[in-house]
Image 1 (cartoon, one colour):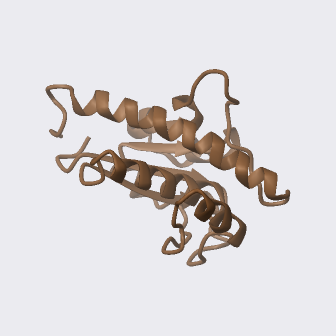
Image 2 (tube, one colour):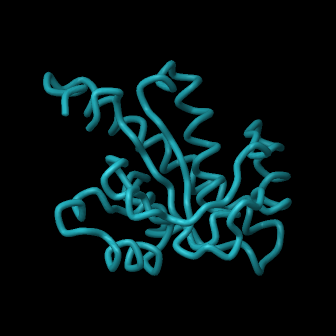
Length: 168
């Protein structure tokens, strides 16, 4: 963890649906809990096909219905420096976790996890890609991401309460 707090990177394939949704939800929840100054959140994709684009319109619409604003976010690919910069790199599914593992230097592998590892056990292990589906897929993404972000915040609170928190 850095002296500034905890840095979290949400990762999916194109960085236009799942990971910007997770970024927006986590930012919102951190702000509500007064943790937005101690936890930095960003998102990225394992491919660069959508670099510079805003989140998918359907992701933005469904997020907005729940009070999350994704409009200012822009897609970007994961950069080699992200492995050093971020304390947690959270993949939305197994394929993106494998892509991160492939590119990650060994000394940073401990930082790689699935976002859903922070969700209640009864939920599924990954956040499915809603891109080629209907509206229900975007709502499912939000349900899963909200639950996982709640668990992630509990984890963050535990990390921040440790005596060594805030030192690098």
